[in-house]
Length: 256
Ligand SMILES: [Zn+2]
Image: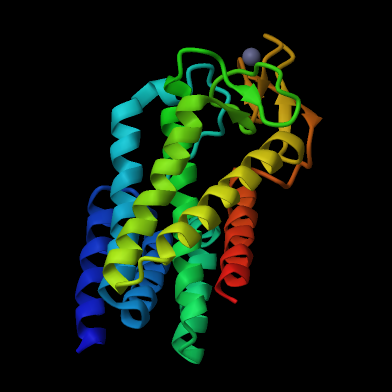
């Protein structure tokens, strides 16, 4: 019965993604399979977390609009393909697969921790740039352009806490486990802090040779930019994947 119900829910979500052109056909197929796996093994609470994360991201995006990237420093995301889906939901899917195989509740908690990190990161990256004062780099504390990875602001940090807490609340209510509220919030919040540290120190940043702006784009002002700091292969998708992995490990440790 749960499989049938999972099939129905994931197919509606995939249909919506195709209709809204939010994902490429390849990305949609992978997202459908991951959603099916997550709902079939994790049930209603797991699906509710997935839905809240997606809806929260879309709502924050609509609310912030162009203000999310006022200096055009972020890479253009374009259509979301399978690699992108895998980087953003792959770790959560693995946690759920391990839960399905072993039946150990720690993996279910880890799934929620990873999703808490994802929503925290999405909300902060969309709402953080709305802060009146410029964000500061999480390590050097120097002011940096809004929208650039590694920056922190009060609005951004509060958005992170909100995102992690919402997922934790849905999980606690859905599974009848009040203790998970703190564990999941913590796993999500520390994971997104790790995301900022990687964003500041390791993610590829480029210098525009025309306007002198530090950017995550490989072209700016119509010219190729040059690598200024970080690792060329470590883009935002890779950072998201590693931060998800960090939250997964942390939640597993907390579960033990
Ligand atoms: Zn430029």
